[in-house]
Image (cartoon, rainbow, N blue to C red):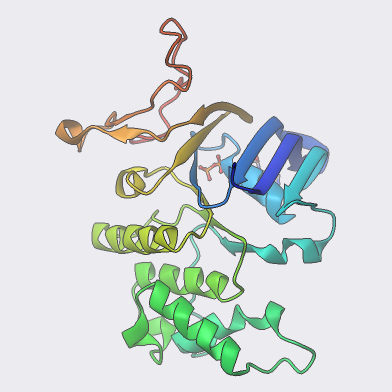
Length: 263
Ligand SMILES: Nc1ncnc2c1ncn2[C@@H]1O[C@H](COP(=O)(O)OP(=O)(O)OP(=O)(O)O)[C@@H](O)[C@H]1O
């Protein structure tokens, strides 16, 4: 039996105003998958996931989430989103628990109060990103990488059907990258389906179940994730994408740009 699709995009064109950026894309993500969206700068990776989130316009094609067509804003409540290059430090002091609790708001009833079950979900989300010891710490005191994990926990607090993360490991030091990769690994073992826009496959290589490559607005590869070649760990060319049509040895590599490396 095949796993149910959590996301299904069929022949979608996505853009801003009347400008199409992603064209004729097909993407299906099934339960338990961890899919990397790879591609060069400006190729349309973020636009692809923003189409799913209603932050860019789906100009044509069909998008389904958990088996239902995505038409209304409320349909998107099942998507947890961790945007690009965001941290949570702000002018108003908030603890980790307060920020993560705010992610629960879409699930609350009319009174908007967190009940015991909601608080348990919040605590569990903080545990999932391994910030248990920091629950009552002001987020402004945390590192950039820890703040990213707070944002992941905030998205988890809504118990999303799928978690979409845009460059979760970008712009943080290597220790934080590893901690974020551990968090993502932990979520994968819990069965949370994930779509991860990333340049840096390295720390995530062992957790990905699939990769899609976006080149100039089109999906040019959809198949097994790249493998990291250990002997070339510091080379700009240290990832290798398997050919999804390996039986056809003459097929040229879809990897025509260098979105994995030092771009
Ligand atoms: N809000 C917007 N309005 C208009 N055009 C946009 C908007 N956001 C992105 N674009 C354009 O869409 C194209 C693709 O951008 P997008 O951010 O999807 O690429 P990306 O692959 O995610 O790049 P990066 O890796 O640099 O984040 C670019 O030409 C960009 O200028």
